[in-house]
Length: 264
Image (cartoon, rainbow, N blue to C red):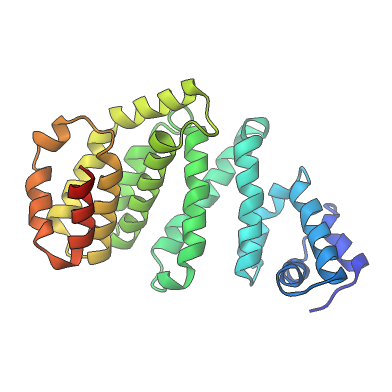
């Protein structure tokens, strides 16, 4: 689909319904064309991304766009909102965005053709973790119990939830000096430590009972991140070591468990 400059400018008119096919065409032009057409596409996309109401278009784009690149563009808009203006938008809008992203993550992580949208799901996980950093524990006190409870309903959902918990651990304990105040970082670390027993029990449950290779692998990867900060009692006073030893003997998980032992 080709477009004129006048048509492309319609994307910046927020009094009109968003034309997702037109947006797809502009994004496609930006990634595949050169010269003046690409410059026009870049100009439109930059203005759209910087528009203070751009975030209100995100759900429409994610639902109706036929292009992955356009969906990634929408997620960039949303991530910028969460990082810079989350506290400035109305509380009911925050709740709406949170509920929408959680629903989308659950839907995608339990679909049978998971491989087809693995990259998209990974980007949604990053968005969800950014929301968690803003909302938990104050406005989302049940986050840990929610994610642990949901993990027991589906192995594919549990696998993705392990990826989310791993991301959260990295954000809070490894990269927390970046976009958080020291007080906020400490608060998240304290919350993570105080609720860790629920996460630990889930990890042990998976290691003991699951024969799903990708799930056990994801759980091992997540535990590897946790071992940097969890109280030593969890390592030496529980069955964690014996469980890991058992898994080391399984060739499916040798690489990950060797990384554990080498790191620690």
